[in-house]
Image (tube, rainbow, N blue to C red; front, side):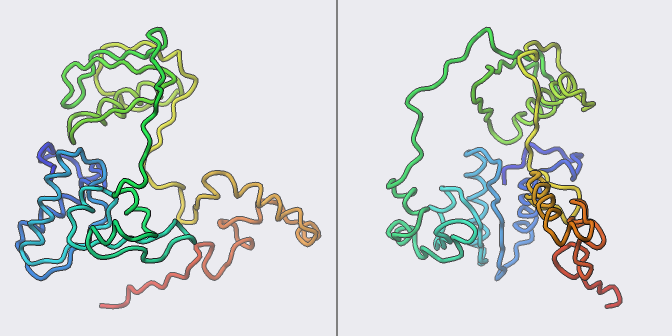
Length: 284
C-alpha cells in the first residue's frame, strides 16, 4: 500500500490521514475477509504515481477476494480502473447533489452533464502555460546540508517570486526538507516563532521574504463552533452590522453579543453548536 518507508517506531500522531487510512487497509488485506463492503475516502491523497499504482493493485486484490470496494476518489487512474463509476454533480454545494453519470467508464465519457467525463475524454483539459517565468539567480533562497531523517546533506535552491513544486515518491523526504527544515527555519527567523528545526548547515536568502505562512490540512478554528466565516474574519463585519440594527441599538447590544460563543447571543438550546447532543452514557 505504499508504506514500506515507515519505520515501526513511527508515532501514530505523526501519520498523515492518508497514511493512517492505508495502514488500516493493509490490516484488512491481512485479515482475508470475504463478503465485506469497504468504503475508502480518497486513499490516494499525497501518493506519488508509483505508490498509487501499488495502492490500486491492493484495492483490486481486496475486490478479488470477494469483497465490495467503494472508493471516493478524484484520481484519474482509480476512475479508469473501476468496474463501475458514479459521478455526482454537476457543480459544488447547492449546484450539485445529482447523479450526472453512472455505469462503465464509457458510460461516464458519454454522459453529457458529467464534468469528470469531459476531462477524461479530452473535451476539456488543463492548459499548460505557453510562457513560464524565468528564475533570477540573484533572487534565490539557498539551503545547504539538510540532513533530517532520511535526507543526505541536501542542497536546496528556491527561486523567489515563482511557483515551485517539490515532488517525489512517498517517504523520499519532501516533508522533512520543506516543512521540518525550510519552513521551521524561515518561521523562526522571519516570524519569531520557535519551531524545532531539522539539521542543516547554512541558509541564505531569507531577506527576500517579509513573512512565511504555512497552509496545511489541519482543521480550521479552535472550537467546534468555528466555521469558514469566523475563520476568515467575515463574521466580524456581520456582527457589527447586526449591532447597528435599531432594535439591537435600543437594547444596547454590542457586536460581541452576536457570537456563537456568548450566552444570550447564541441559541441556548444547542449552545451555538447548531445541533443538540444527547449523551447516551447510561446505555450498556
